[in-house]
Length: 242
Image (cartoon, rainbow, N blue to C red; front, side, top):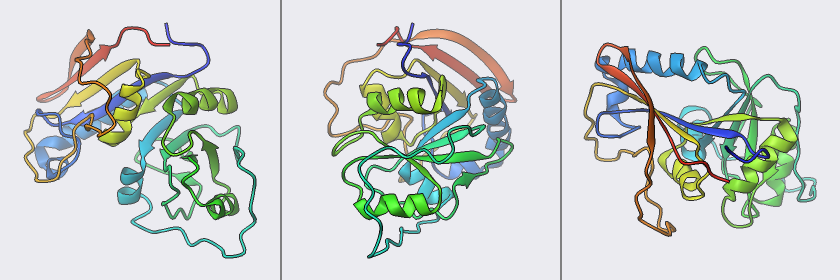
């Protein structure tokens, strides 16, 4: 059983046969059914919260915009700020240094419900970035000093927003942070019937220089299901973590 003061974390990813999550294979016609199946399976988790990394948000939602910080910004104290404590759904974004230039506090993606944006910050983010987020009514939570404290982030998401189940759909580096901290309860993979060999492609878990061990992490197969032509849905569970 997971600890009661953090969400149950499901790392849910769409991958190629060789475990890639980015690249041109996502635009290949053979992947279309897998993309649809990824969304359909995602709905079965009944989660109010999704978590992603900065790079994914920059590519798909903020289009590379940098935040324009006010020279006369109000210097708010280093405290968590929740703009919408009763939102139907949340998109939690790891942006430790405050680099994303948001324009809205709501993300709309495919058929998912509109998600209120919650940014995970560290002390690397400029103080003026808090003012930037508050002006746009974007929530933010401090989770670490110089790097992400994934455990603290989960505890706060549970305590401040009542999140019991979190779907982790990082980038590979974001997924790896939670993997290293042994905070992933389940891995859910929708595997498209295609092999990807792009030059710059990301694995489900991307190796970090800070990785403390290369030990193998055993999993238990929960289920396997064909969810589209050539596409399978694999669910694995880790041993219970604290």
